[in-house]
Picture 1: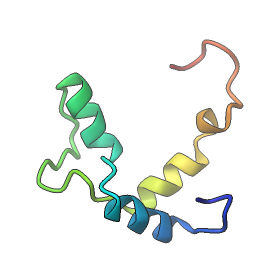
Picture 2: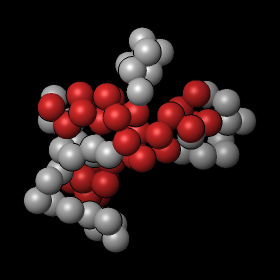
Picture 3: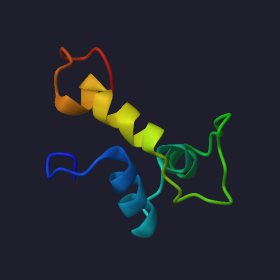
Picture 4: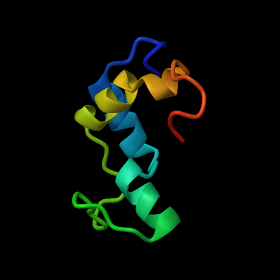
Length: 70
């Protein structure tokens, strides 16, 4: 979406509308471990700051040396 010209606000809106689990709720459902910002009342609510953090994370771009992160 970003490569297609969408900004973080637009991407957050799209992910929320398509009911994609946000990272905190995805982690909770996968592991059962709660995070301090866990809000199970709105598991599909994305914020532009969450999208920005993901877009700025070098791991998602494939720039991390092997076996430094999982």
